[in-house]
Amino acid sequence: MKNYRFCVPIFILIVVFSMINSMAYGLDVDELFSQLNKADHTTSNDNIIANNPSSNCKSEESMSNSCNINQCTAVGSNSCNSGSGSSSADTATILVEKEYRKGQDPDYNFEVTVDANNPHPEKFHPNSETPITVLVSPGSYQVTEDPITEVGRSYSQTYSEDCKGIIEPGDTKVCVITNTEDPAELTVVKRILSGSDPSPPSIEDFNYTLTHNDRQSGPYQFRDPPGGHGFAAGPFNVEETGVVDGYIPSYSEDCSGYIRNQDSLTCIVTNTYIE
Image (cartoon, rainbow, N blue to C red):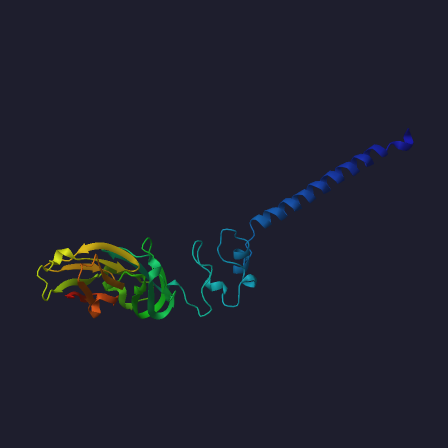
């Protein structure tokens, strides 16, 4: 037993030393994590953008050459501006609205042109349901509309005050285009040259049909004073029906052809008695 009297103390010393060493290592690890959590190190803009999922900007490496880190904007807006350094403050907005009076044609029968600095879009068909948004650079501008009258309905245009003028950076102008149908007027006149007819007919004995834009209407009775028809631009033709025996009809130049916006034509149908 005497040979082992120092074994127990040595074993105890080894165990104690191991415990102290482990505690020291644990303190070092805790200190390391503490320092990492409280680190006062500098984070670059690239790291903030690249690691922030709520940001609408991308890291500088993933951006195109036309977009740099200083052009990134808040979430919900464009991620960056053009390479020229322009921003929303360097552009302006024109809202083009459409209204109709006295009838309505499909919107695609009209074309709107925006004469401005860098308009987008420059030409488009208006929308009577919702405004069309046009982005422009600041400066003078004018909005005009060209109707396509060949469809058989013709309109005149009136423009609100903000359809032309000067637009400043960041401004929004509302241009309202109002289309009013302007029907043409056709008056149909009857003349009877009865000659030696002992029992000449009256005007009401004659009828006619009117064809306009490939649609026929009537028959109508000739009247005194003469009857009138208001309709939109388009091709038309007047033809007498139920010709009275012995009377041959002839037509003036304005009894057929193309009637245009705000025209006022007179068609004369003459019946001559043939003996």
